[in-house]
Image (tube, rainbow, N blue to C red):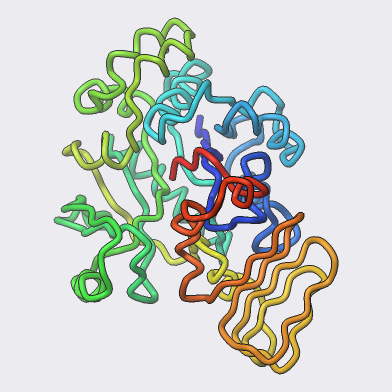
Length: 351
């Protein structure tokens, strides 16, 4: 029995002012007509049945996620007592899968990605599950880099596992500078997508061995005391708490047009642009402009005679910045007065 866990926590403050605590990034239709979380689930339903897809989010988002995901049973949208990063969330979801099927294997993905080739994505997911089941490995799928991206993590493959493309994980590198990213790519490193696969039994065993931040809470989880488990856990990502410590890590390469869509500037990679390189969403118009991103939810926005700007109109807030500065919105929010940032400023981003 194969299961999928979709992580839908966090806020995505780099998409302020459209992204808020009540409508975070994963509920925005950044790449098309549907919210990102809906795309994440729908692209996986050919791989597993809806009854075996679990979505983990916050209590305040549970109703919104259920409305966005009518394909799923309501009980499959899990509400965390509070945010504690990805390791506790995945331990809880994996335990849910194991309770239904002790032989379960689990694929973990994030709700806020875009994927250019869904069929290739599903093939990579199936291969990761195959490897996890066959080798008892904790598997990650690495995307082949297309540019020296400094906002992503990288995974460096080690020695081979069998005769196929699987490799052991040599090390992880988180958000290198451009020169280091170029060196990593030249050496064969892959983008660490955050697509993971394991069997429920192997995940539990490796958590007990390595994930000291959550081991103390596992008995509470076994009793079904989710709140007690979270209270006993220390927030930690599954990357740090488990993958960087285990000796059973494995990586598979994948080519499926993966993008983390980390800032407004990334819309130029996932949405169609006009001949001048502008991306306009909503009632947005560009005149003699080049390489601009314009997102207009309320009223009409016109951008004239400028280049390389990001203009976002959402609610009672209008943001104008450059594409270069767009990834720095977290820093901007920290510098704004609360009555300004609070109009759309997300709180509690755990990513």
